[in-house]
Length: 137
Image (cartoon, rainbow, N blue to C red):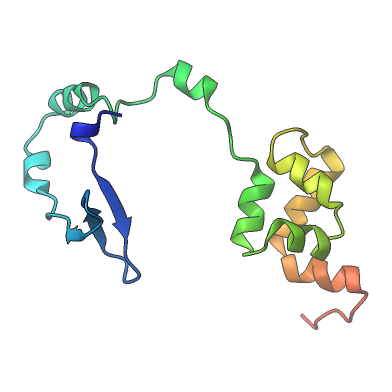
């Protein structure tokens, strides 16, 4: 990234975006001029994207080199759990969850099926593991 063309942006608690200035102070971002973008042709949009060193479209090679976020990490975060909480709640060894999340290992077929059940009904899995009563349909 080139420093002269890069700005630091922060999301405030109310959801607004502000630019963080070099002295640490902030200022509101200027509104996006959507009419300017709407007036551009597809060729102009692509040329502008290709000219921006910080926002070039990905090539097939870029996609091939990119590291995928393991689905278990996405699932755990969606449930709002730490790695330790996820491992404990769903009776999966902590080291196994860490290996999955860090890409050192992939879940095997039974583990993928279990993760799919967790994603579908996380509280049902907790109840089943606890041996608790099943809710009436």
